[in-house]
Length: 345
Image (cartoon, rainbow, N blue to C red):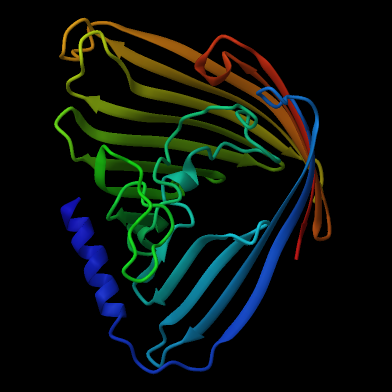
C-alpha cells in the first residue's frame, strides 16, 4: 500500500508540470427532486413532503500536450459548498483530487435495482465505503490490466477529513482512531461469459492508537444480464481490529452484509426490481482488558422491498416500498415507502 501511495503522488506531480492551456469552457447542470415519504423514524415519523436540489458547475480545458483538465463544484439546496473534483485526463489514466465518492463506495451495492436499494429508508446501515466524503487522490485506468479490467485506486492522507480544506486551512476530521487510508477496486466483464460482470474491492485505514488496530473493508459482486432481466449477488465486510478495552467493554468487531437483487426492464421507459439485503453486526464483549473475541453477540438486520422507475424524457417518476426488520440493529420493524419525481437539466 505504501507503493500505491508513492505511485499516486508521483503521478500527480508529473501532471503538475503544466504546459500552456487552450481556452476552456463552463457548463451548468443540476437536478431537482420532489418526494413524499412515509415510515420515517423518530418523533416526527409521519408522512413528509420533501425537496432536494443540486447544482453542479463544471469548467474544462485542454493543455497543449493533450492532457484534459476539468473542475466540478456541487452546490446543495441551501447554497452550501459540497463535493468538489479536479480531474486530469492523461494517456495513462485519470487522476482526480476529489471528495465525490470513493472506489469502494461506488460498488457498495451493485446488485440491480430500478430505483433504490432494499436498505433504503433504514435509519442505520453500515457497509463498505466508510471513507465516502473524505478528500483524497484517485487514479482510474480502464486499459492498464488485461481482459479489459478497470483499476480504481484512491489514497486519503487523513481519514474523515471531509471536503477539501481552503489554502493552508485545517481539515474537518473528527476521526480519533485512524490516520491515512487506501482503497483499490478491480471490475470488468467475466471472461467468456456474455452478460456477466464482477467487481472486487478492498480498503484499509491505518491506526494511530494502540488500543485499536486497522479498519479493513472488502466486497465482491457478480451480476448477470439476459435480455431484459438482470440478476445480482454481493457480499461485503467491514472489520475493526480491536486490541484492548476497559474491563467489560463492548465494541463492534465487524459487519457482514449480503445483497441479492433482480430487475426487469418492461420497456425502454419502465423497469421494476426486488432486493433483499441483510446486515449482521457483531459486538465483542469481555470481562478483561483484552478483547480476545471469546464472548460476543450478533444481531441481523434484514431489509427487502421493490422499486419502480418510469422515465419520461428528462423526468423520472420512482417508487420504493421497503420493509426493515431489527431496524438499526435493534428489535423493531418498519415499513418505508417513498415516491419521487425527479428532473435533470
